[in-house]
Image (spheres, rainbow, N blue to C red):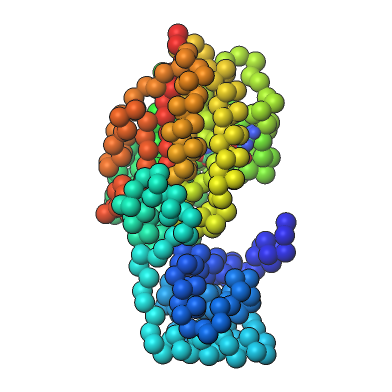
Length: 388
Ligand SMILES: C[S@@+](CC[C@H](N)C(=O)[O-])C[C@H]1O[C@@H](n2cnc3c(N)ncnc32)[C@H](O)[C@@H]1O
């Protein structure tokens, strides 16, 4: 664990929540915050200078969290000494006097905007800008319909789903302790919905922390949940315990492991760049450089090749990634099908309001979808069927 992670773990929960909110607001608006800072300084501050970091944090608090000016100045100045302190004081004073723009449609990093413009459209980039400015709504998945009535205020956009405009501790919501629901973005709940009800034994091949394992178990499948991370599998086991659902767990690397017999269905929710989760995790926009996306795509193609062999003839392989990069979704599946003529795409039905299946039969979730209802994480999923 690095120092920053250790410090974060040692903070009291309220301070940790505040630190996380400030970091999140900063990352949501970083290019625009930097433009404001650059507009108020004669000489460009180096990207990694402490003065720029402190200014970014202070401005993000003002714009994203509405922190009063005196509190901003009082918390920012002690973080820097000497010349940089005078500079931060001066720049903050200038910007606060002038008044800050609301930054409701913050720019994404330039490289990401260019990439998504080329892959999708300007409309998608604009929707992504609008969606990153706000924390997304809370989606709950339910094991059974009866528990949904505890949230009459929640909007149901698919079966076993309620969307709440709630933030804060989820443990305080009704039914948490009894395990009647779990938090899962509606987009992330789509892949498990593609597994046919008739599939008896299902492998969840990259299972932790278990959102999809719980959906599969709740739907009555016999589930084997595999993941190479022991610590993430421990979270999956906790989730199963809380919800009273059952699955066999296997800690193993899918690149080495093999089952003793094939499954009726395999769900491969593959590790990916996770760029579709940018609303909750704006840091992914900075982490997911093209070389990282390429490495992810390479790993996904190896995992897909292995998972395909674990499917019974006539069985199902559902592939999914929480990514907005076509290399990890559409291109991955086209390359797979070119190598494996024994698989075909089973066209997906409309599983959630506003998520229309693509003409190739897969589900591609984009930031333009369901925008008026709070949007969705970017996602890709496809149902592949092996020849009988
Ligand atoms: C996208 S997450 C899975 C999320 C999970 N399906 C859910 O719905 O909660 C990908 C998972 O793949 C696991 N993973 C990555 N590489 C793996 C490998 N080679 N073998 C098995 N699991 C792997 C990671 O530990 C991570 O838990």
